[in-house]
Amino acid sequence: MSRLLVQEGDKVSAGQPLIELEDTRARSSLRSLQIRRIGLIAKLARLKAEQTGAPQISFPHDFSRARDATIDDAVMAETMFFEKRRETQGGA
Image (cartoon, rainbow, N blue to C red):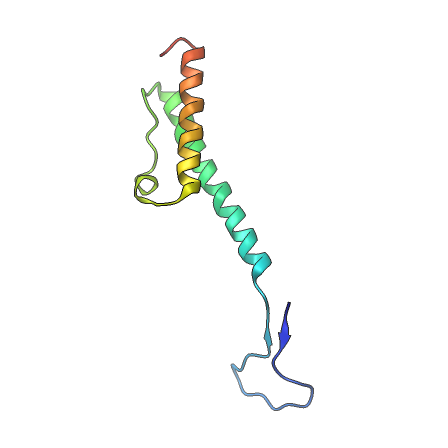
């Protein structure tokens, strides 16, 4: 919900807020995009490991320092997928 902070005919000064907008939808969209970005970064790390024949995935350093369940989930999912593909291809 948004809220008008001034009425018709009010005198306003430069820089004065005129309207207050709720940012719930914007925050939700931002979080969705952040989750997608994390997933894509984790997937890219897995694909690079597969391409180079690495024995394990090298995730970005900030992934290991972050305390974020989304990162943990993405790392776990890509690691499991990586290991399953290696088993299927006989590389385990």
